[in-house]
Length: 521
Image 1 (cartoon, one colour):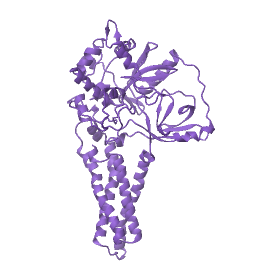
Image 2: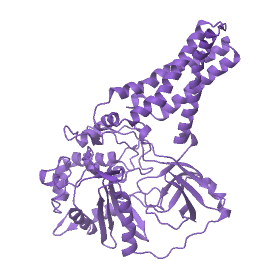
Image 3: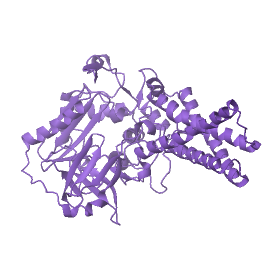
Image 4: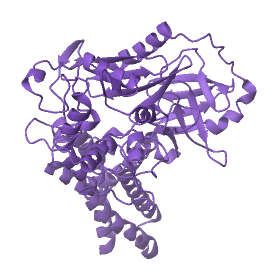
């Protein structure tokens, strides 16, 4: 009752099922998800109350993994049960299963803290130990456990809630948790309740991964085969390890038959044009300042004359060949764990997103050309070049004075107009090319902003710069209109002033697109 989710989509409230299937429609945010030290850690309930993310799509439309949503579900458990979540977890899951080496507490008891695994980063050809990551979203990823404890948890699920002489779930509840509850497309793996599906070698598994900066884990169950595994790595290589283990485990114990690789059909290249475009992962920040430094790279899809699709990501291009209508497999016969690409079409036949078969918690939305990172950066530099030409104004004035060239008569409003445009241009140039790169790469500033409740004063000051420039830009546009009406300066000078006004608007568009305003903090 102390947390109110905005009614962004009237008549479409967020339900517990939406939270459990990651279809609530929340943007992604890492703000205050981790904490800077062990003192004065805010509770996960306080985190949920103070860091409500924007709702960016109607609930139930698409999945996009949300740590906030999972943490909010734990708040609901507390409210319904009347029991603190830690106690509820201990009484209903951990104790019945004998998971005495498992805890959700951030400040672990001494006997567990002394056995906590060390995480590592890798740099300069050597491993570097990292400090403990302190989470404010304990229910979404703050559990510390051991492989034997996790094995007991897995056995209970493979036995539909039963474990020895006890049971943590009724059989029908376990079956409900393991069943598909939502899918972005019928042809891709779906979300279950607390798990998600994975398909490999014709077998269905249910799984859940876990990631921090250094730890990468995977719990995988094959209910029909009564088997599964749990793995956790303590360095950046852990993610690759778990994917490789998944593939090796399935190929060794549950091999699939030989699959004929479809051949590209050049005659289909024209039909594939509808898939061509730019796409972006839907799990990212939309409304906050962190959008600027966390926006995922766009992905380009192009149709080739030989009938293949070329999908270019941040790791490079890859060729795909159509296996069935709208479904594309890797042309090199490799089988990434993420699986085939499936394009989703709307009722009118247009493509709105694609998804990988084995990536149920997210999709890749098709985005217009002007929403891509590349266009935004290109526009920033183009506008920056135009705005830099305002430096010609004082240089020309200096040249006239030093060479005794008569100064053209200018009305007072024309002088003010140039000062206004020049100030706006210099402010935005400094902001876009000096101040923003500085604050977005300063670890101390970002850590204070992301991992404490204090907004750095320097960050507020920097993001106030475009607000001042906005006021000056409005004045510059007004002056540009007057310049043509009152015939300030010569025609080329009026044209140049107008170009500067347009460049100011363009750069402010870039500012707005990236949420680089003080009110976005």
